[in-house]
Image (cartoon, rainbow over all chains, first blue to last red):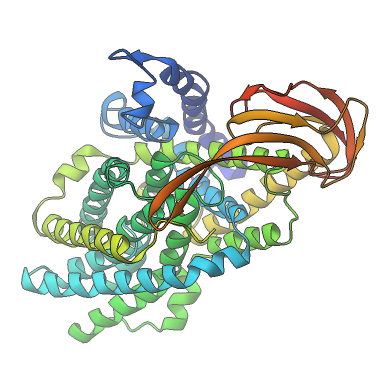
Length: 369
Length: 131
């Protein structure tokens, strides 16, 4: 890639990106409408109503099919660069989600979201540090898993790895373990949510607290309720997600500091330098979008303008989710055995279940907006 | 993960990717707003939720101002009250989001409408406003 120049780099992205866009087009324009009308077991729309299959889940499943079956476990070189735009689409979508809120709405649920997320993020990180010691895991593996389980499967683990000298294989296994757990919860959570009659507010709060990866939080909320609008599961889940993403630099600092204590020659890094290098600045875009929405610059609620904006948002997310599916390598997840798997499963399941208990006990069904 | 082959982004770093995402979303907003304000001459207004069309307040050729009532829909409103889902039928009025002129009235009182499907009113909006 280094010698191709800007034009060459853009050209290299085209094939993979075309596959992602084409896949989503077929799913949204042909497959989803067909599923809504299809009669299965004598019931019209059974696939949508009972299996909750919508374009969100189909995008992920098709991405998984591409990687694990069609491409034989590895994204081919011709498509690789295009599929690497996945996170760009998901981050762009997250920024656009800021249009669902106004600042007064954010303030209404912000306090609850901050309290729950901070308690769960640091609680889980501390639990994993303790569990890693109990299970005799390597300190760098424990540190990476604490970041992965505490705040976010990929971003925090990758951000923590250099500071704690994690080996690439340990990092890869930690990410695979966490993503594997996330995939399982992504498909199971909408059913649990509907079984327990959770409201959109409760579901968003639960998933935003209990699921570890931004893309998976979004996908799960949209699988529960595919609408983009204030008061829907994705609107609430995203507030929790943004608060969690904002915790990344602080968790990286906390875990790196824990690592220094046990490694006399380890590199010392200040919170300031971690904030400067790891602060997820795309969140500022989300806040900027909320500012535009608060000032009524992007169209009134219920307007055709906002309707078009949300339709574009759905396409942006959909493209990102096809790519997300293509980054799920079943063999990598199978390989993530041993200690990381045990730590990941124990921490992940505990967080998932405790978050559900707390949400059922303390979060009312009626949302704040 | 520092190896370019294992990188999860096409950009130099996550920071570059964040900036690109901000620019991409800003570009999308500018394109959508410009398209709706200056390029689209008229919009077909569809029901924003499932319901029965009760009344249309405008006629073809009429001028409307932002905030004027366009149509009323009988809808089922769902709300959680004391952890119980309450459903009640209510009539809601929907208003114009920009100044403009009614080009066509397609809906009739009594029509059952599906969210985002049938057009009720076609509105030509003033250039530079967001319909």
